[in-house]
Length: 125
Image (cartoon, rainbow, N blue to C red):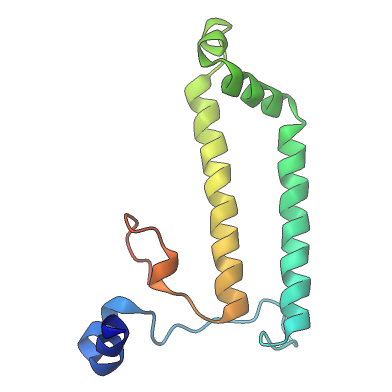
């Protein structure tokens, strides 16, 4: 409660604790972003598209090699698979899904909280 009181009381603290002045634009023009039907439609559409992309990756030969990496990394090295490259690609895709979810949360709630970020990550706002 004291932290929130300090946040509301001091303008110098406000610059480091939240994203004042941040404007979130509606993605689909002509529909207000405060409408819950719009938010639900947007979330379900993006969720479905991300699910399709993840399913396609998992069922591709690349996804099969990731299964091999999960089961036995040393064996994948032995057969000549580029382990570091494949891990880099899948970690990049994982971070893309995280950024998409964060963008959707900010878009639908019209609020980005510094608490929602990991403690070791730098503030983006």
